[in-house]
Image (cartoon, rainbow, N blue to C red; front, side):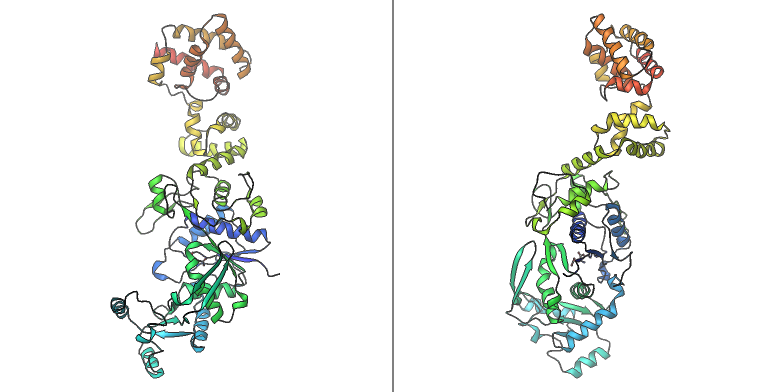
Length: 504
Ligand code: GLU
């Protein structure tokens, strides 16, 4: 059997969109499932749209997500170079082959001449029905063509498409797609102005030379597939043609249409894997990494946007995804982007991380952001108390700041409602009770405090709320006895005293 080889072939025209990340992921899962290879090819033949930094961004994104590349830009390999702008001589060879075989022709029409034809002829397209009216090597003598080229006139090379041919594509996701060649135009394959091929030719030549077995890409490239098939045929490679699989779109969370980079800003979630700063405008687009996502959560979330395992299971490691993935289970219809689900996945993956590991991350954050240096054991304990309440590491602080500093201020509404005339006296008693607890653990303090409340027939809820208010400053947070165990006796007593002094 032919070795499975897939490629991710982005154009470096900006940051990698999350839909592109999904395409890369599906390629990776498919390749690894079949013990195949994954290539990274940079399609930078459109120099006008080149954006500096985009290539590094793509590589960094894939690395962050654990999508491993076997061969390609940044990794090397037997088919180097993998950057199309460095493969000019290779493409030129095939352009010449097509010209020599009469399957392509040279055209000199200037933009204004083309514009004029578009105005003259309704629904103008450069094809078998119009090419005779144009300035090209089919309508001009050989001599004239050579003279123009010698004079340095710019030209393009166009594919010569035979009309009325049936073109059949067997797409692994969409099934059989049949089109008539008459709807295609004689696409430009090469431009003398920059001596570069266009996307179509470079893409096909490279897929062939790099021995790609499966082209898995976004639905937006489906319209190019018939032309690509013809190119394979014209170049004599039809038997080597890769299989096609066109993935359906990622749709906006609300309404219809393709998820765009503007949707992220509009709805407040990232549509890029990493933060991206536009080198021209300086505008910053936010990324999943910086928003606090774990890469495995993003991978899991994206895998299920357009593929399902056929079971109820939702949490999959990347290894599990590799073993379960199949193109047959990739959906034909678009997948609606569900940001709440992305958060849910991160929550789940955060619970799977050990308290020790999370403590390490949080400790780092505390030092850098809050100038707080704390004992690791204490942080681990805090993490265990608040972990379940957060989706992101970045939410740890708002759930735990009161462990590190007594705010000294008290939620006004809560004070109004809960702090009563008898509260100072009760809190003084509480101080005495807690001072007498020998082993200051949650278990011991809880039983001592509850016994005291019951013996005095105080209202349990009323006293506990005042107690919490004194310690936290608000009526929130984990189990109060767990909190004071972390704080220790001295700090607990100090805070209750401070509350009495401030609020009475
Ligand atoms: N360069 C194209 C892109 O930017 C590649 C399309 C393909 O995979 O053939 O997506």
